[in-house]
Image (cartoon, rainbow, N blue to C red; front, side, top):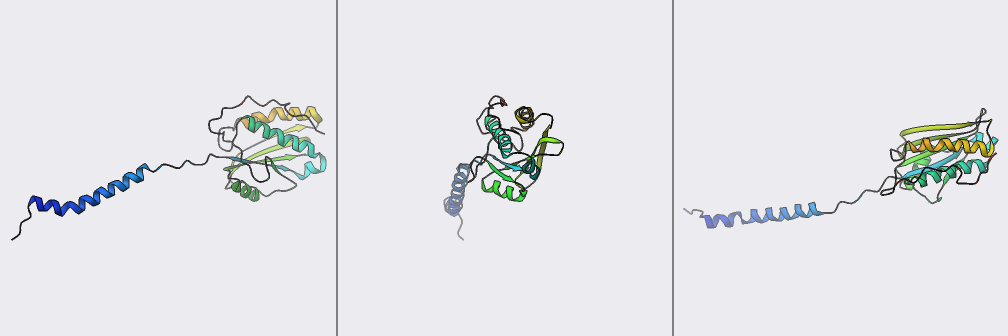
Length: 198
């Protein structure tokens, strides 16, 4: 009868020990593999000039409002997505939310800020802000308007004094992420851009 001596047992377990050592090396290599950073969240601003504004107001007022909103978001270090259209994407008349979401995804955005500028019968101008994720889920909404008794530059300045507070309460939260490592700039100064209004 052949008995296994301690020396011969060590040879029996050698393949098992080698396999365990190789497995440990593989696990260690997997553990040390660097973690890829995720892309920072971005918001895709989109501006719509509603038919009521097209029929009863001027394109200059629409662009003044949209440019001033973008100025404020940049000043507050909000992470903005850009696409082939450049700094500002807008439409006149109608715009499908599904199409805008697709544009936002193509630009690498996480959120959509959908801004509608209108001219209601009882108001000089009305601005509505809707913030969605790229799946179309509404995160928050705000709106402000200016009565007809104040028009032109005075009315626009009054309207612009209301918008920063509506935006600021969401900056840094869902929908309006701030650029990594960037501090907030001072609050928006309403008269940074020259006025063109009717």
